[in-house]
Image (cartoon, rainbow, N blue to C red):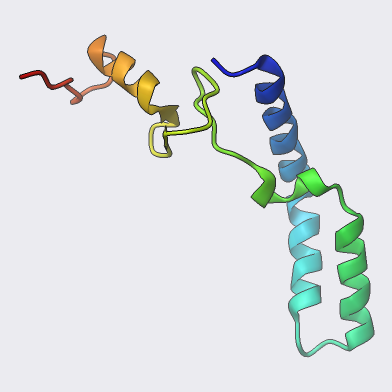
Length: 101
């Protein structure tokens, strides 16, 4: 199980990403628009740089929703391989059977 602080930090980052998503997208559109004047684009880049770093979506990290484990994460199920195996063994995921031979 991951430290609770790491899980909470990730939740905080997710909240910041959600909060600033529209503002960030608007500034990026202005900054990347070649038809606009260079000064306007540069001002948009400066405003973008003043936003909190953790509001960028690239700073998010996928974590298992059950254990908080950051590695071996299945995006479709939002759990790690260890949690997936445990849920499969308990019969809580339909259609998943742990193989044994």
